[in-house]
Each structure stands twice: as structure tokens, then as C-alpha cells.
Length: 272
Image 1 (cartoon, rainbow, N blue to C red):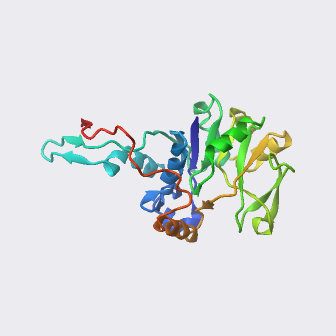
Image 2 (cartoon, rainbow, N blue to C red):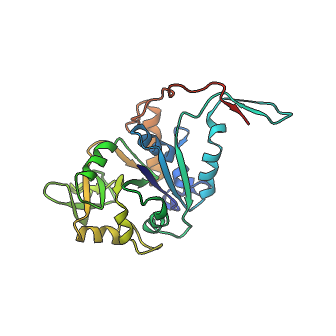
Image 3 (cartoon, helix red, strand yellow):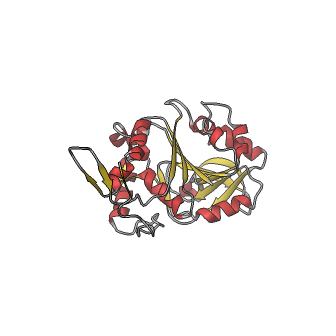
């Protein structure tokens, strides 16, 4: 199964950071928040990623193109330029980076990757939010339903519109302007989607969270998975500071993975 990550927006509410880097590349604890999200999926065995870039996509490309030099031990002969890699990257990931343009909305960005996502269900999330969501439980909930898309509902105070859920909380029936501070649940991302979702996306200017979701609700095809654990988006500088403080504590609540190196890592792998 692939995991698709929205990573193309301008991040205007975090302009202190995003003037020079796209929001998914803003660092928490010395690593881009995008890396933290990918580590969560990889912990559950999902290591094939499709990154939907746009604004400053070259920063994302550069990060992954140079990932080995940033994270691995090496020995370099300055005269010949010969490089000997003394370790492998811990992350055995396949990362596909798509430039979906500057002006696409979320639905348009997703539809531009349609050719990569036709083989079956795929995970989808935003490149600016972390959580300890149980990905296998989310996937199982999706498979147990006939939904085209299953979203993760989370509780979050503040500025987000709330979801109207069915009595068993397994299906989304609509959206409300009522805030989560009044007892509502919100869309926390972390979706599982069928390729059918492409049929309810019109084009580049389609916002995935608007018309496509309304159309799926009308067809009874928008499912819901409840998550009562940790979830935090990084929309503002304050949010970044909150996440930095969590990381500095030594026990960030979204860190479900272990820091132990993968078994069998070569110490003298190859030269370049």
C-alpha cells in the first residue's frame, strides 16, 4: 500500500518559516515534519510514498536526493572525489515526488497522481500534521466498510469546522460550522481511499475537502475512523513551538517508531 502526502501548499499562516521552505520541510527536532509523518507510516510497514509537491518542491527533491549524505557515515578522498559509504540509511523507503504545480488545490494535486494510484486502496494525509493514529486499525476500518474514503476524526479545539457523524460514528453525514470546543470532532486527515475518489474530483481547482467529500456523503461513501489519541497540525508558529517542546521532552506522543537501527545494516556498503 502507498501513502500519499499533500506537500504543495504555500503555508501562509506559518510565513515566518515558509518564506524560505515549504511547510512540510519545516523542522521539528532537526527533521522535517514530513519525515516524522513518513516514519509513522513506515513503522506500520507502509514505505512506498508519493509526495504531492508544488510550492518550493525543489527543496523536497533536494532533501531526498541528498538524504544519504545528510544521514550516513562516509569517507571521502578529496583529490579523487571517491566516496565510501560507511553505513546505509535506516529508512528503506521508496519516495516518488510529483510537482503538481503552484496553483492546484488539494483535490487537483491528488488527481494529478491518479496514474500512480490505480492498483488499489492507498493512504493519504497532509504534510503538516502528526499523530499516534493506529494506521492498521484505520486500514482495517476502511476495508470493513464500502466507503470510497475513510477519514480519521479527531478532537481538536479551535478554528476547525466539526463533522456530523452517524449514530455509530462509522460514517460522515455532513459538516458543521460548530467548533470542536463545543464537543465536535474534526477531520484530522489520515485517510484511506479507493481509486473511486478520482471520479468525484473535477480538476485542478477542486478542494478535496469540499465538493468531493460532499459528493461521497451524498452517496454514503465517506467513512469515519475515530481517533482519541494525540493529533496536532502545524498551522502557525505557535503550533511549531508546541511540537518542538514535545520533541525536546524526549517522549513526543506521535513517535511510535523505535530509534534502533535496522538489523543487517552493512558497514562498508559501496563506493561512489
